Image 1 (cartoon, rainbow, N blue to C red):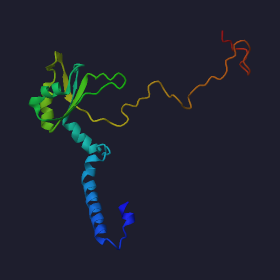
Image 2: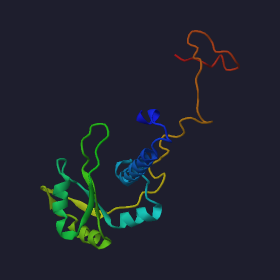
Image 3: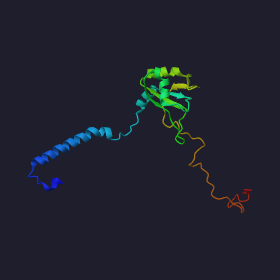
Image 4: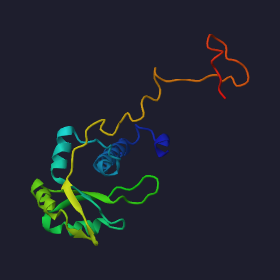
Length: 174
């Protein structure tokens, strides 16, 4: 607002101060933009995913009330743990009875495989190497085609009268 009332010819020093402040503000915004801007999730490539899976294990028969901290404590002697994931049911919110543990190195994952058939919270757990998901592995064609050329659509059912056409004498629904 003040800029509207002061002529540019009268105060060149004022314009220089505004330009310097603007430059400082832009530098500060650039510096902190990487901390505040939401990062877009980029899924790992197939090669990166294979490398992650080579240092990960799958633990089944986990107690329903287990926590991430307890699982980390269970695998403490195997090596440094990068991440523990306990999936949850999307409808009930209750955690499932398996977990994925990602280690820092494949050697740690092989050490964790030795923990197979050991006791965790009064249950014998199974520890196996995590497999790499293959695209389309979950898509199955159980029950045949749902919408396709083999679909039968019944439009009319004649109950009290004979059906039109050449098979009208043989049609008896009841």
